[in-house]
Length: 529
Image 1 (cartoon, helix red, strand yellow):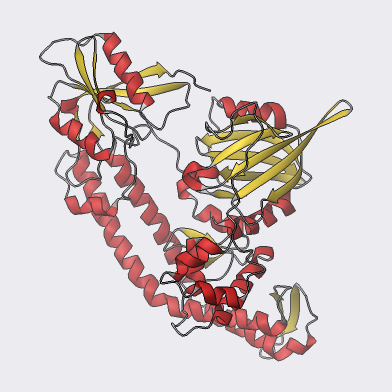
Image 2: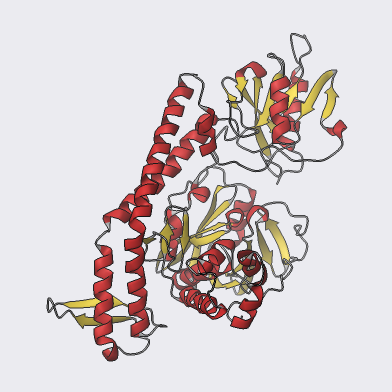
């Protein structure tokens, strides 16, 4: 979500939850938080800083049996508190949720700051300006210190940018990049949507008008899920979409990256990667087929638009709906309106949606055919994997090529080639080196990896010796945990297996390995939360 999408989502959150009381808080995964708020009825707010997401949700996310230190901190200070305000820092991807908790006659205020900035995103609980705790360790913000906000980016306010300024930005060879770099709140996807369908001769005034139209939907979201791309918008786009009553429902429909729990052996199970790829495609296929089933929707939308054009003079300005009589059937029809648009502009909006529906059918049919073929190929690969047969390398082109598999550390070579009680230990510094360590390992060498986290492979060279002492294995396990994304956890499970039981499938992404047989060892982390 970019800044504009966050603003549209916050409007829905405010309307539903401001003035309500916190009933519960939990973290279904390391990167997502759920805040239960009661305001006339139960609502759930999903906050996922590292997925740049915040919205109301009805997703059924698991509540872990052990809540974790940060969740416990939030419960201690915020359970029973009143949600008194939600504000966005300009158009930036930083949001503050303000709470008030009364104890006897005193009122204490807290602020939960969500930095929805993607891979470096974080959550901070503040009392005044003082940090009580954070979801992830942050050198910029340590517990007990005053909160240091993100630096302002100095971009143009999208509500005030002029057509002349847009003309200046379009002089760039990369107009999408120029818009995202210079106008606050606009991400790459929004910039691409803004420029989509325009000819090279499109005037800055047209683009400026398009931006103004998108801004009107911040206050009146017209929600869509773009099934083909796995994303949601709060404004109509010129490609096949599925309409939703609310923006948060559209976001729920595409929130697979947030809702997938971090299963065991995520980094070492090729079967898990294949299964997730099948699930993603089947989910998209369902959405595309539902879209096709609404083939008569275009005719209905055009009929509503025709009615608006016929009766536009009778419709009061800023009306939220219009009850009109269809001259063909003599039946009354209620049409939902965007109050900020005139009756004619509302009709034009419906005409455009009808046109997109008709234009999208060939594209959707072709996409369904392609995805169905990919599902068959992936399911065949899973069957071959289960029979321990070779998988066609082309299958791995269908898997997401994850960046940063393993830990891309750049320290001295000695830190990654060391001895423990006379045993040589090697630590991979990046995904390619992880592959090389496994490839060069002897069949009876021990291979270790933090379970459920991206990180370095660690190999203990047996060197012809029959036994490796437990103390050596445990120290190597600590190194595997330390050189992984599990940093900050109190306890980490580490997979321990002989190298002969670990295999990198041919053609699979760098750093991916499949463990056929192994044990797990739990290690304590120094300085955990």
